[in-house]
Amino acid sequence: MFAQSGYHTSNLFPAQAITVCLVGLNKRLNWGYDNCMYYLILVLLLLTIPIFWLLPLYVAIPVYVVVVLKSLFLYWIVRKSTILKVHTGLEGLIGERGKVVEPLTPFGTIIVKGEYWKANSLDDNIQFDENIEIVGNEGLTLKVKREDH
Image (cartoon, rainbow, N blue to C red; front, top):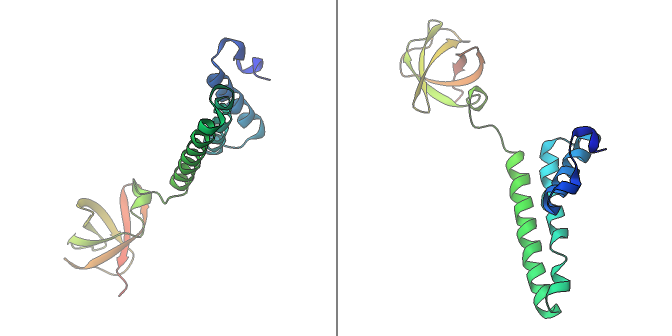
């Protein structure tokens, strides 16, 4: 399975081999790369099992509990970050509010988050200093309407 992709796991360190195996399995099962990160974090817990052979039990159990708690916290953070709303680019501007700095008749200029944008009014003409809401875009021109009160 992995020889097809050009990887030979015998030449890698154990953690690298596990990563290669997960990526290969991920491609075969079509999980998506986000899911691969989740499984990689959880598999790292398996790599800490040898501490039970190396340390006395009264030391190994607390160490393993700390590793498990940190891994679960990291898993939660990564999972949470992948489901957040986009905050950058044009997609992040949809739904934002701004002000007109050049009357929209129907084209003009608005300011949103401190940036000036060309805009097209979906309503009638919108005058200077009126509040607007961004509802879409066409290229780099934003489509706006009057803000609902």
